[in-house]
Image (cartoon, rainbow, N blue to C red):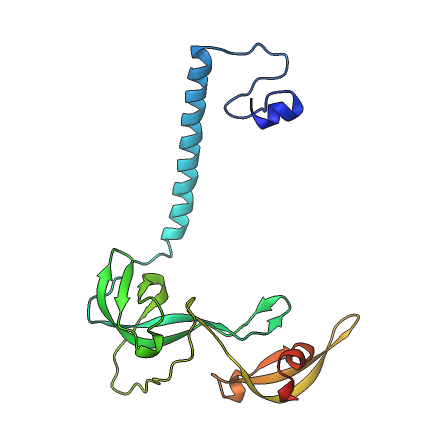
Length: 206
């Protein structure tokens, strides 16, 4: 018997078995016929829901394809390392590269020519991690690559504090500091952080 029947002493009312307590149980070919009909109905409903959800996604989905020898940017995730109100980081993801495409692996993966600094990383990436590079002779590409981890993320460290303020809430006050980070050494890219977290993780800044 099913675990539900063993626990409660009665059949579980589902699409496959909809008998009430005290009703005559259906046995033999009739039970098999009803079960097959219910399974077919369930499959049709699931297929209908999948097609509906697919139609929503296909409105924004784009078929991206690259050629061998073409250069692309590689998407990496930025982790500042300070938890702000339960969430990590708030700067947009950055891209490194460009890197040349050596070969195409299947329909959605590409083999990239990575520099020696990224030799420990697997060199085959999904197309969602790549971004088209438009060649321009006036582009000034910075070759310095931050230490990337295997999950395509890197940690950014703070450089200095340029401002401080008190954020007033309804029942308490939160001291905040404006921090300039290493990979964005500009005052325009500074972010506001909780002073308590910064003092615990980076006491040398104070």
